[in-house]
Length: 208
Image (tube, rainbow, N blue to C red; front, side, top):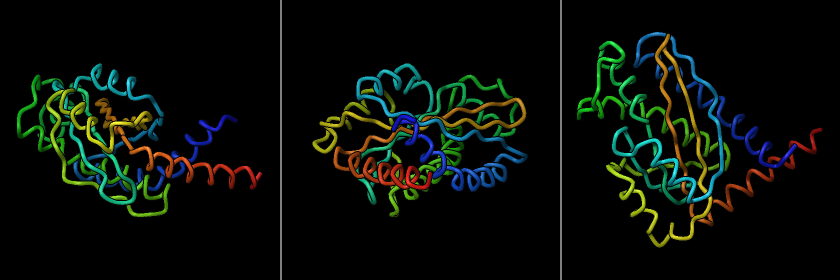
């Protein structure tokens, strides 16, 4: 098995407990049973990361940024593409799916409540992986791709070449919601994360 496949398996294992907590919280918030798929994990280049952000629409959907303040260092970004953002807003506000065409401020604050649950999932996953608490700053809005590029120009992120993407989906009956969580670790934090993953890969191999 390739090392990248081991990484994905370890990310999935670290995800399971966090996802079960998220399901309970989302079910209570949305009202009714929720199905959530395990996150898909990828590691992509800086260029590919910016391309995907642009394709999913930073300004049309809902995108917020957070600094990583404990455990690791760098930036994280939570993105709901437009249709997913409208779907979750309609459900939270008790409206018919498909009845919304634009996000207003009330809709954005409703999405942020769901965003907070997902953020806690991802910080739990990272904590499980590195064996330390991981904390984030309060959210900073990203109104355009330029806002994100400006953050990437910071001295600590200027040399970042590897970005981790978590893609998660959850469903309530026939309504689907897709979200993306991007981790932009400083080179030092990326090395720390990879070393932790490699030590877990070695443990898995030795068990066999």
